[in-house]
Length: 580
Image (cartoon, rainbow, N blue to C red; front, side, top):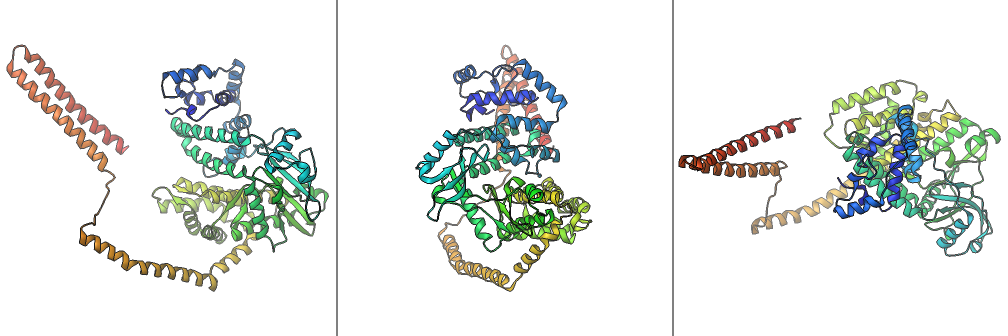
């Protein structure tokens, strides 16, 4: 077993994980991971040698108080498993909270009750002192705060694990600008890097030692978390996202994104325009906005992002939405643009095919569209797969469109595809998450919201564009270019093959996946045959010679018989294991 300690430099962090697992009733899991039942994690010590193991064993004390152990036993019997997992993530800090939040977006691998519980995870921490924030800003920008900003509010607007947000007034050639400054927490990069390294090792170890965990794909979840957290740590990417969103919605006044001031931004500091808007519920309660109007506008923005632009906000929860404009003409402001999703034109077409098939209530087309979106990891029984999709979609597609629960339908369809070995790409999972989040918010402020009805004009427009003469002509031209390129290369390639054949350089190479096993079996049998033959000949000669050598000959004959029996039994066992 490869030790976690190969990937962990901070032994105190390893001890903290062990204590938290025991505290919340996972002592048995800790033991299966190799911590053991005593004070030293013998099964996890580095396999490099006894001296290194004993050195680590001295430094790492995994003793847990009796009170913690008792509390864990009580939680194990009184609190559900998903809830205890949420408690573990909360106790272990921001990296594990973020991993739990990402897991809550994976209905293909996580059960409903787990998703419901993990969605409760909140990323909130104690704010840093202003002196630390000031030092971080000045170190990142290479200038003093007074040189960049006319004023800088010492009290934060919000504090999270990755960064802290403050109001400020930026010095600008066009006059002072009200801005928001997002500052990355000092030292968070090294903390996250250490936790990511640990999570990769833990995920691999969990899959190896707890086989039942493989249905949740721990290593795949950690890989997705690694990509997401790496993107969030680079504020330059968030700035680029804001600029790109603004360009896509340049001619669409229904949405607005904060302007980025790059002269006061870096990878650790982001200075953006302050949007003087209200949160959704505040806008409805205090500013006279109507829930149905806001719901339709917000859904329209997300639908345009996903199906028209192929570049969308992956986390449009109420905290990231600001309401601007007037009650009769609301403008949806979107902030916190670090987590985004992307759909290629091909994936957009396939996603539209899925939605159109759902609107048409065509079960077979729904199954085929979902199959085209995913990647089969094994041979798929299409008859059984289509029957499964038909059964899952029947309970949704037989209703009026406005009564269809889009989030539940997507969740069930994705689980059905995963059941048959069809791997759904992460970006499509983000599409599902964005639609589910927006649908949930929309139906909360407008119970009669018809998501499919709002999306239908976008789908029809996309279908018109897909089969427009201009696009069809472009596709034909692209195909002709590829064909002409192949036709140009074919004579030269054929000539090279003929030259190799004439000069004797042409070789054909084939592979047989069963060949290594057959060679190995043949080698074992040849070796065993030589051993048995030698024993039989020698034993027979000694028995014939008689006197003192007779007993030794009998022993050699017996050994030969045992070797034959062992080989026959081994072959039978291997055939049985192969069949099972």
